[in-house]
Length: 354
Image (cartoon, rainbow, N blue to C red):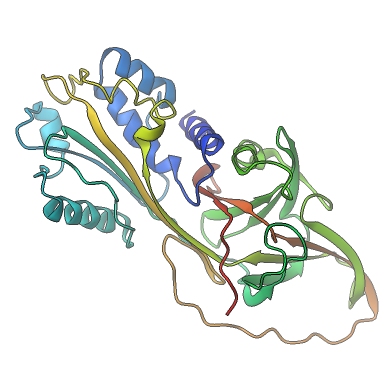
């Protein structure tokens, strides 16, 4: 139940704004925690979004800090982190160091300045790592049409037998092509494109809702087919995707209704935290992602280019299906055993080739 509700939150968030990178999975546990200590309307709104707890299946971090002078219940005092001082020179390093320690990876700055009058600050960070079962090699992508036409983009290429990773779904945003890039652990990355026929929020939200049930495909947005010389007749899948990295700091209160924080952002009762009325004055998510040749990382990593060998001419004919993400596209990082969408984002500013 909590996996489905967390993915619903991802789709809802995507439909509002398909940002470069975001993670509802890192926010949901904190919303559920607040729901458990709230009362009245704030509790009802939070429960509508996060009715049950969610144990993250990967390493993550979430926490809540209070400013000095806020009386806490004994239970909350035992779980709360160090008090905020209202001094950005003290509080910012505190939040950044906490996130880095909990996730085991550097994260971008939170981007929020806790003020001395703030009663509560929510913070969430999530680190996702996936090493590809079949690594990519560096290349150059030259789109012939679309928003990136005429540009030389730093890209990643891969080819291999079988078409099972390539699927499509009929969605409210139109047909969406989905490519699963499988990791060696429990995390996969699903790339999605509608070929520029629908707005980014609609495509990404539809991908979140349909990736688990999408059907195998040999045609769709971004897909081309050709018969080529080969040594056997097994179909081959060629993948071409821009290399990308993204980092973002989100202020969740700008879309308070999406997260059930509208009433909680006004003076409200949180009897599980304090006997005094409180308000959620700041709620932020800081997250980073990079799609590289060896894998998917929460921060950019160093790469070594690999030069592919030229195969000998074959004597058979095989079907070669090529999928190109050569115009704005989306991506999902998915925990394979549970189907939880850990991260999502939209790529509209690819990296230029050197």
